[in-house]
Image 1: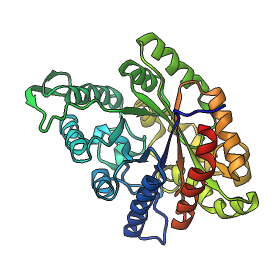
Image 2: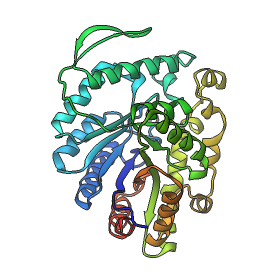
Image 3: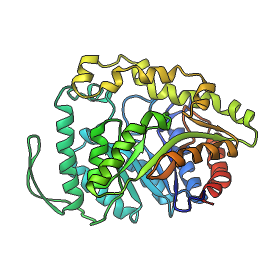
Length: 356
């Protein structure tokens, strides 16, 4: 079945693995964004994340995308996600408006509460106030996106007649990301998209996505689901598996590294703050998964273009409301040439077949 309206994008966590210097990592990512623009990808997404380099070395996202915008012409630039507790909501809203103006409306973004290991590293409390603080900050941020003059009185924020400068008046494509029901409810309520976390097959998220679709119907909005998967391709499956094993295994290990390479936050404090996912051992189990099991279990896509097309079509068949496929091509310290190769082959061999 053809899917002519389906969007395709690149998603990067900018995982930093030795011995590659940070400067080399950033320059390679900029070259990969330019290449994605040339190949016709709809968007390039990068996360905002601090303190844990194997997970990500991407904190100055406006700086990265500012340089990328000057080198590209068409591709959308997307932050997945701005970690709202570490920003003043109205300052961030103003920055979003300005960056949209600077890029000719090419900026997209998501917002979220952030991973459970970040608060203590960032000097913020990890307690029962975490979620209500975030949700109030989100309400204030939305005001700053939609109104040029903001008055807001809450428990944590209190402003009168604050002017958003500059105010672009743009309607933004916004995403939420996470695993909680509250995240999917908020996204449906506002008509926002959701980004499915990488590393998980559809079966692991079916209940949450069903909940999101139900809430969209309840709120009168339309589902907008971005499916993210790490991907590597070669004309020969054995070659693909051999070339990809190290960095795809590294992708999982990097995602678990804040819990496996550092002292994890106390479980009672994580649970009190609503971060129970991080106490369940799920990430540690993923990091211990063998490469063969990763591919067989649909945690990553690796093989020939035909193998990847089959996986994409299987996902499209079961995931109603899926509007975009995002592939990660540079995880786990992948060599630059491998990232370019994956982008090239996916664009030339997979996208035309899926779009029909």
